[in-house]
Length: 299
Image 1 (cartoon, helix red, strand yellow):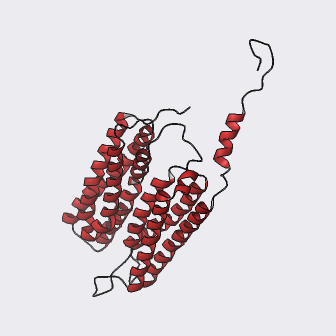
Image 2 (cartoon, helix red, strand yellow):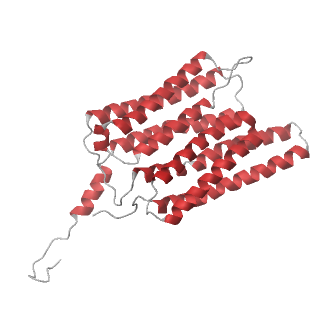
Image 3 (cartoon, one colour):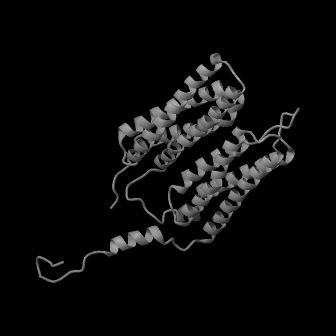
């Protein structure tokens, strides 16, 4: 590149792109607090697998709903490995991701627990494993939100745009709606198939199919609209806030209703409550981010 004033040749400023790429691919030196936190996350992931295995070991019947829920709970262990990488690279989204992951993991594993015949509670070892897992998840979230050393490390990759923490929390929460809707939908569909194989009449099949179609339409609508709204939420678009807020209210009402109609009180507790908590976290984060500048380019 030639300077218009002196005619001297200047080297193209490639250093900024190289530094940005290096910041993305090469993690910073981890402080001791980050190393301890990553070990804690790894232990939590192993605890998820251990409690799932224990649930399957003591289960009386490996029915289709348990298989679906176990598969979904197993994916949570991979989610903790993703969280380890986010923490290692200093991603600011690690905090809200850990919060949603911890809350939904406890419920995902708890929904696998089955009471013993003639009892109201599962076996004592299952309850103990679930309590240990809940304590580990709470510890991970507590360290992420309360440790000053972890907070300094998470500022390693500064955002290109100003993103309040509440906006990141809302985005992570709403992007998890799809999976939280899909799991009980698959369970309900399997229940319908089992009922048809047992010879249930059309008076039961027709309403069940109608609810399943509405449930599937909700899942498709969320899968299409939520990523679109979540993306523009980062740019501070007001219409995106209204879109994701309206969808959060819709799913907050529809999901528990569908769970109750097709899966009963048991399904409402196992599959409706996790989404209720996640939707409330997303809505509270949206309210807290109201009026805050978001999406403005930094530098």
